[in-house]
Image (cartoon, rainbow, N blue to C red; front, side):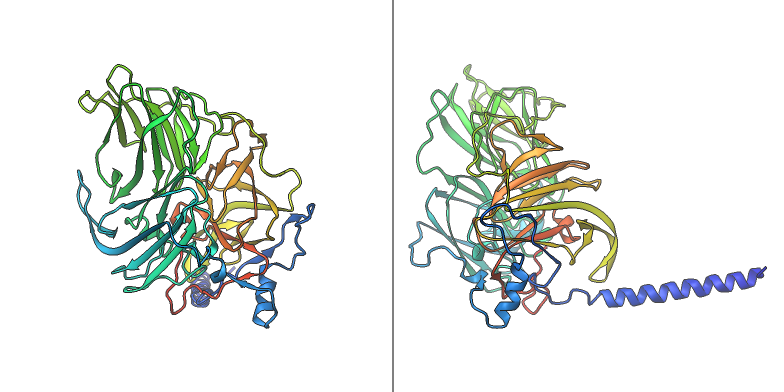
Length: 509
């Protein structure tokens, strides 16, 4: 039997060897990423299926990039995927980003970022069909900044993701974004450079696209509307940047549309003691929405919900609780504020809400079919040891790159094998929810760009690949994206000249 001294010596040697190996692994992994392109990261996945006429050959974007590098024809750069350059803009806005103090009326000031001197920045309004042009100026954001148009299916060159569709705009620089306001609805904009910091600290704002023509809703015409943007500044829950409630004047018996935007990192709850209707989710109208009573509505991080409420016919006021900490009080401004309603324990199930209607495409025989399974394990990313997220068992940067061809019908099976909620957000597209945990959707088509995936849940979602480009598909709890919960949908034949972690300083997450 070895002596105690020999055992101790062996243990010390073992610890030293382990430490040396660990240090070597850390040193090696600190150069694991360095400067890289999304064209070369991860594993190329062509998807199962191939039923339809648009099914790909499996060559994929990665091979297209190689071909482009060899001078082969047919490759398309993300920089060429733009709105009509010859069309005159209908809406032109200049947005200037600054680092500094964010004033929080009703609360305390915090250090962060402003857009045109405030946070949230100015609300942009356009009409469906307008060509929107935004000139973005970075006056003093030291890490560079961009603007991403969350929920708007813009051309890829305007997506605003540093290192994929553009370089981050440096201090003193500017970038012009142009896109057609195709879909009416409620959206928001935010930086997609060091987004987990810049979004949290206020580099964001609302954008509303009004319908081209007034909708026909007999007996329920909205006479007033109000945007309610939720954000937490330094622990202070705010509504449109104020740490207090909002009052909306409305005639007795009139209907008010409240556009709720959740810009925070977690789910927001919405409820009222008065009946209301959910008329839109993520910018898409609900078909024949029913009356909601004694139910709460949950809005994922990044998501939006438009609700229609009726001002009391008695001339009093009603309270709509938004985000848990703030309220919108609607009715006679002189009326007393009604008491806080209790939060219902039951959640409105959007899978069965509203009236069904046919989809614009057949999702029963998709051209591509993918799994997107989220879990977690220990690993090292860019020299940082930790418990990182995995996608289909693979850790960043070895994450799947989902290849599609233009025109494909794509079905994704999302599954959450982790213990956290993940609000999944696909850029450039909206998805329709087909089923949850194997139960088929029975309500109005549930069309989303931000979808909460709770622990143990699974969803089948579908979309048409009708917007060529390279698109992030990530968790909008942004610290999760920083820790590797981000993949990409890549159109065959599309390439990007931009890189991450290079001289341009691009760091999208």
